Each structure stands twice: as structure tokens, then as C-alpha cells.
Length: 298
Image 1: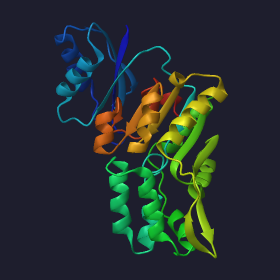
Image 2: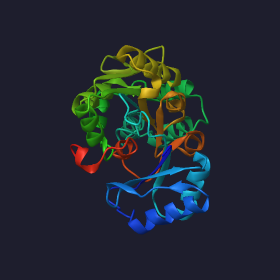
Image 3: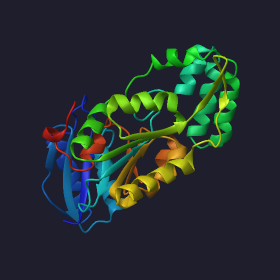
Image 4: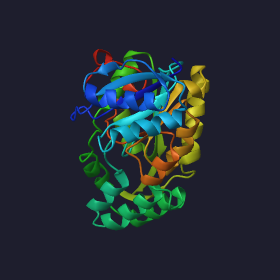
């Protein structure tokens, strides 16, 4: 069939029962779709429902109506070129749970001021570039030792290790591209096995935070990174999967063959074509048709 509707829930909350999947299949049939049997990628967690004769947006709407409040994500995809050849991933609130500027700021006792700027910037309410300059300026003069203390607070996003390990096992090039700082992307990239990383650079002088190196890498740099990775690997952007949560990720998500907003800010969810609101990062694997026995490191 020409379309696949993929249902995915969080691995710790296996609510995707055959009854739930059949309710979605019935909804597609009521929309006059031709519907195939559910193909279970992992029982309770993820399944594919092939269908024809219903527009993708209409199919997604019918599925979400059938699901009601059941915490299951819905993605409508084409079966062709489903498994991507490169991953370009945001880091903060995506590969890791943290926003590192916020972590540094809390250690410096100005956390609430900085976190509010971060929230508004990631939701697209503030210019990203001015917001990061303002936040760094608030930290100017703080001891550089706070950077290491903040690193101790880093927590990987559930599914991050499995996502990268599985893609690497399948020959996928993995790039970590952040509007944060290379002080952290370098260690996270090494820990998880990313092939490359890029991020902004904090200037340290006399063992204190002094500023941020220009030019600042943000929305355009992430899009350019996606395009560069595709070019260097001899593939198209349609062969790439991208993931992020903030407004500065949207250009990258829109350009990628599969661009997924992951537990994203409200305005980002509205703008993104594909959303994961409930699942962990292994959802990106199920979205590409990987099965449970193909997933490493979970």
C-alpha cells in the first residue's frame, strides 16, 4: 500500500493494545480507506497500519480521534526510503534532558531569570541569537568551575543511547548539532558515539565566563549542517532524519526527509509535520520501521 500509519507509545507505558490498534484501523475504514492488518514492530509499543485511499492529514486526524486520550503518537509516512542514512540531532532537551545554560545559571543563583529567557526563545517568542547573548551576559564573571559542576547534572534522554547505537549498527552517519556549547557536545558525542558535533563556544578568561564566540550558531547553522552532512555523504536531505524540540530546529526539521519535533515547545509542535509527544527517542527508530529485535542498547 502507498501509506503507513505508525502508532508509537512510550516503552514504559505499553498501552498500544490490539484493541487500540483495531480502533484506529476501523476509523480509517470509516474514512473509506483501504486498510491492511497491523504489523507489530514491538507488541504494546509500536505498530504499522498500511492504508490507501485516505489523505495523510485526514488519516492522522481519524487516528487521533479514535485514540482519544490514549497516549499514543501518530505518524503517517510513505514506505519508500523509510530508513534514513544520516541523523542530525539537537542536543539540549532532545538527546539530553537538560538545558545547559539553565543548569549553569541555577548554580550561579540566577536560574529563574535565565530559564525564562530560554523558555521564550525555544518557543519562538524571542530571537534566539539575542537570547543566548543575553543569557551569557548574565553569567559573565561567573567561575568556569560551574561548567564542570553543571556537567555532573546531565541526564541522557530515555532512548538516546539505543537510538544512536542502533543507527550506527546500520551504517547511519550521526551528527550532534546544538545551539548550546561545545563544552558539552564534545563529551556527549563521544559518550554516545556520534560521528561529529558542532556547537557554540564559550569564551573563558582568568578562569571565568567571559562571553560567547561569534558568529553564533543557531537556526541557519543547523539547517546548513543538515545540508552539509547530506552533501558530504553523497545523499539528499530526503535521506536524513532530524530531531529537535525548539524553534531554532524548525528549518532543519522542515528540510529533512523525516523531521521530528520531540516533546517540543507548543509553537514548534504546531509548526512541525511530525511530532513525538509520548514516546522516547526509540520512537525515531520505530518511525523508520525498525523492529524490537533490531534495537541495540535498550
